[in-house]
Image (tube, rainbow over the protein chains, first blue to last red):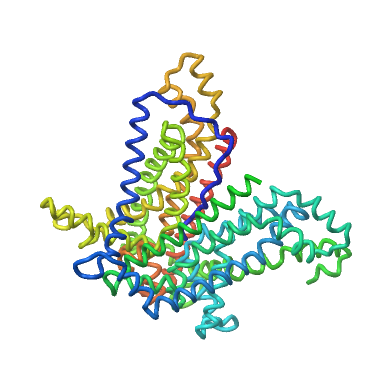
Length: 277
Length: 288
């Protein structure tokens, strides 16, 4: 799978860069402009194509056609449901684990960290290969029907979100005093379930939200795993669209870029707000 | 569980908290990998053998791995170089401050903008009827007649850099922040030129981080499947695409070899992540 990172929150105390000599500054402008050209040209070209669906004039016809396509909306909504389910499943597993590892079993940390890194080590295409081999025959037959495959897909998505989820939640736990909060809650008679639900979860809201948004951005248009599990989600739909239509794929790429941008922007925003508090 | 018989019930309770995590990882990460590992040692007529790993030296596999390694090395080196330069330019190159935060946000987006939409964007730019291809034609240059193709090594490299460079930027920015102003001052007080400061102080301190991230980029490209699939329809000669073809219909005519190809990828990925984390730990000594 592709390794990805949320934008790191700005360091507030980053030393103000002293003005470098003039020649230097020209160099940095040159680098920046070249970089900007490389990154913006494909986006601009795609946007231009997306406006050209109607002959002779620019307009949003490609977007209209894309959203009018029955296949788009069903695969899009299916992918959203899958992503949300995967996020909840992942949170349900990672929050107690990160909490336990920090509070009661620090010795397990290296093992847990190693396992959460596995999705970086196992490429998506290899993982789905193994998944198909493991779950396509009894006793673990899960690929027999579309719906059971879908459940399996959501589980795999939850598993590949572990690196992002664990890191967000663990960073979040580091920022709050887990032990004191836990002891305070215990002295008021709360049990473990209530502690996690009423004390830990609310204090981790920002961390959970960043992990969730990052997972959402990655899982929503995921292609490889969905493709080989024959799921009609957004990724395979988009790949098919790219092959079969002329203008709609450009509108789709712009929409996908906007969604990724929205998710990343929200992560940057909430972590900045958090800093301000 | 046998452990329940022991008096340490407290201990057992501890394990219950992390049990779901281990079971889930076992079912959906470790189990699938182990079954591939096991099957990669199975011969065509059953029985355990190392033969599949010997067959990795066959031309079809060597070609696919070779292309994957070429693309990954090239995009790791170029992505590392340009990513470092951009990170340097926006953090200490004297550019206005908003450039830095917008570059960070954009890098976050672009490093996650892989797969089908990315491939589509480049098809509209540099494909046969892409905007830039058309622009070149206006100036009388036919890119595709002069040997360029988006569906080639060069094209794939150009596309992969779109997520490789931003990843480098995201990792390098905090590392550059870790350079302490005192070091520059100390070097200047001792009479060092800016060039000497960079060569003898800053770069040696940054080197583990630069190298480590380049290795991370290598793995990032080596394991990528979706972008290449969307770009070439899965028919390009790349290790991940070969595995994809093997899933759909045993193109190697030997299931065991397919499993060995998959395990080979896992081993290469594991090595690159391992070296990355070792180098990252080393760089934390100075930049942490």
